[in-house]
Length: 627
Image 1 (cartoon, rainbow, N blue to C red):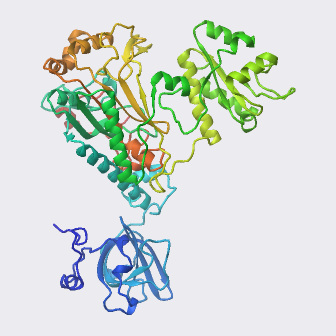
Image 2 (image 1 turned 180 degrees about the vertical axis):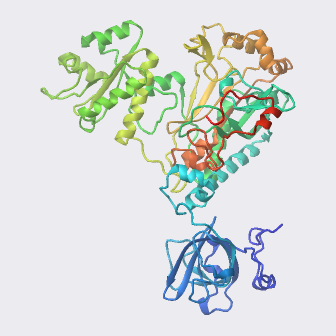
Image 3 (image 1 turned 180 degrees about the horizontal axis):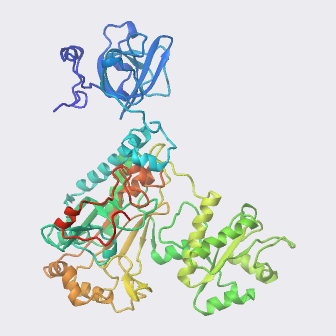
């Protein structure tokens, strides 16, 4: 096996290199060359260091009979001066250089007469003594340049070329550093890295599972894991105590910018712990990770909100706390307003809440109010009421006639409104009111530029990084379509009250999320370690004893052998890496992502298979392959 001499820690000296003869293997990466590699007397110095570079032709120029090539590899660019004044440099068949040709260049490092301060290697260049063509290239379908605006479909079709771009390589290297730093932090805390199965059993949410037919068990299927949840709990029963894993997970669901059908998470579990222990562990790990991967310090402890506090203040359970614009309860104003619609909403057990947009009276035009109304209607609200306070007839809005005199003074007091502001209201059930105003808050922040721009890893890495724990989520949610209760988190989450005496609608769980800048980074919970409680939860979810035994018998059996109290957490690595790189989409920190239609354009997957393969797997399709 060949190892770059400089990577092995022992750079080749000149005599050793010359002794290698025509060997094309590199001694240095292109982007590593610096003045210390050049001789002190510049081009005339016979002591200039002899190096071998390997890379791709990034650019080429013929300037007055001197032919220059920019050679690129993962570490960066190096300028190479070719021998003679001809573009044709003696390749077999007299081939001329072209973009993306793969070369090996042997030459001497010298100081440049015209330095280029925009390049890290811009003080030096390589005078080529030998050039070997390692492989030629067809003309690429797009330019291999930083920040290409090529269509995403074309980039994904030729992903191997797209990944040659320096910005894409930096992002993948950032991902590698970030995950490596996180892994080292867990190892430093005494965690053991354990791999759990990829071929496993289908979950109750089976519609989202990717299924794999078994050839040796005809008619039976494995499922790809949506998470290692059950296996990591069983590891706690087994006494592993502290487990973590960089886990590949799979979920067959509609995609968004922050979702892929296969994704990676840093998964962990601890025994003999409460929530405080999980929080302290992750805060330590993230402090170490941000320090070692980004070179920045983040403050601990992270703030905390219960789920209800987050919904009441922000309307969402993943609030962006980089800006204010919090929800305000307007119930105290309703009795003096004389507005019957709001009064009836309160009588029906609903809520009347609003937002006060400072300066919104001028920054949000009357025409844009329709956009705001569309946002809240999309999230279930019946409509949007609004008011722009003003002096002596300067007020405006659908509520203006209910905001005069004492009523207007009271509304200013309740909402903290001033002349020139915009006040908007939603009156509906509590959940609809929260969600509609929460979505409107996010829309307004983006539209008005309220959230500070994130400075990711390619800048100073300073963020801002507003991290927040959200705790005490509801235990269950009512599924109107299925007419049954479903788990708000997952069915293995412990209830706040182990006796489970409350009604499912009011039962609180020991689940928690970590949020950063309005994005959910990950979720976790204290787990159910008592078999009888686990059976009660299954019963509430409509999973009867027979189905419990069929799907979860091995877990229930494990919980009968002295399981320890335990809890855990998992962070979506694709998402946190994208956010810390300053990106909104995870696609550019995943080497080979799928499209929003879950297709791999490079490999043309998914695809049909040969009929004999289906026969071997005892599988029959109901769809015509051509259709």
